[in-house]
Image (tube, rainbow, N blue to C red; front, top):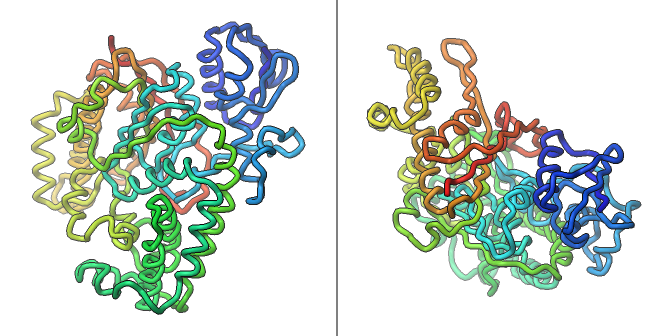
Length: 518
């Protein structure tokens, strides 16, 4: 069998490419015959290779044919009036020879920490799980793992505490069952309903007084009225899938019509002018852009046999304590957890959460305390967390406790500001939360199942000295405390992000591959 690897992928992706090829072909007898050309002796059929490979451009017994993955990526280059038959007839002449990470449903909403669909697909291949297997993601975020599991014919379960993440994941996974015609019809209905008269209820009835007071501080009055009008139009759709899809399109434009600095994740205001009707205009443009982008992708999936996806709003630790449905049933775990000292997710998503009615402002403090990586705590809570760390520090590795106490030695000195004083307790909370999460994940996995963690590192300054917080390496060792076997540690060279979160990228990332004991 001849195979051609993508010539434009990163070094870490070349490592993954070889691992997935060996897993699918069940052999390490792979011979390189050219720069990106290889020959492999295998009983695996050409069709299986073409359909499953993530980092390979083509495969074939006699004539090389494009892999399904390459063709799916290139749906982002096709027109919205695309004919489904054309999908498997694309040739080298019209395939873009570059990394395409945002295609189909994978570009529906901005999300920090979003990882690559090709990486997930490769991990599924490397795990050697079969169709019908259960793929688990304890930090499902924007649903990348869940979507790739579905189109691979596998059942997926995702858990996340952020209601916006849950909505994004639900939209992406359910849109895989939608057609271009359904979305176009829904768009036309929403567009026709966008008029100021005949709204089903008043703006005062949409948000609580407290939530409305908060939103008034971040939007012009006219902007809130326009947002209310858009939501009324969306809510008149009968199909919940379509409602949620258009709510995400609205969420995508909120930052641009608010007074929050558009490229700044922190809560900083920059009051500007707003032209009445601008929200409707931007919303319809965004919806049209998304429909044009995902329609060819959805048409290409028409012949795919997909399994189900379940998205759960919860913390993995509390979910495992309350539910036994999936305990010991999951075949593989693929996730990208937050890194230590990451920005508080709920606060950076607060406008979408409040506007869409996913949370009330009064719920933020309690839910923030439950989230891994949260940074907003009171002095009382800081003391509680530090005491909890002192009680449980023996459960952590020496490297983690050494880091925490090195920072505490400086940051606990008199006169230090509250943010720096909080850092040691927050780091302790993060690593204890991650330890508890790994233990909960262990309870979900079958014996011998693999777990893939894509983890970023970060840094901080202590007494004007830069301290690296190597979360990836620290979690690599921490997982051994749960009894997981370390299988592979793959450094990633991170591409520069193109979205509004690019300023907040970590310093490095790694793929940690573990195996649960038998």
